[in-house]
Image (cartoon, rainbow, N blue to C red; front, side, top):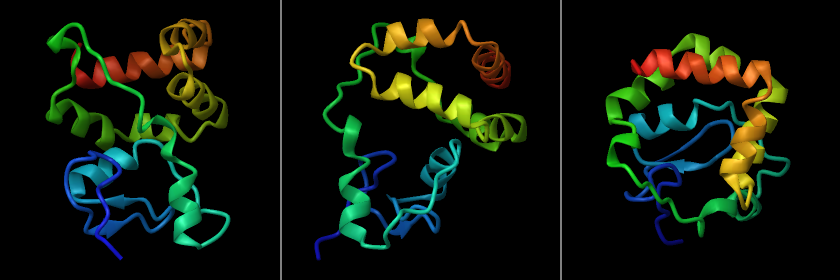
Length: 133
């Protein structure tokens, strides 16, 4: 079987698998990034089935108009290590809002809708406070 690519950074060859969801990752930094949103154990341990379902946003381009809008590695690390943020993402309603934004054909519109939700607004404030914005 050919080596798999890290599904977090999509750059390096994976060396490890998440013990919970079996997603391949290459480093501790990628593991921490992956664990920002709690994952779940797959229905089946069949590895092929696990990796065929989450491939939703592989073809989704990531376009950023302002380079200053891209988070630095240290900011991502701060988010990943924040107990307050990690505790917040345990909320199923918040997880659904985040999934809806991520999987949407129009994520900006979904983000605008999510900002009407108090728990999502508080979550974004926690993130902005954590990264020092």
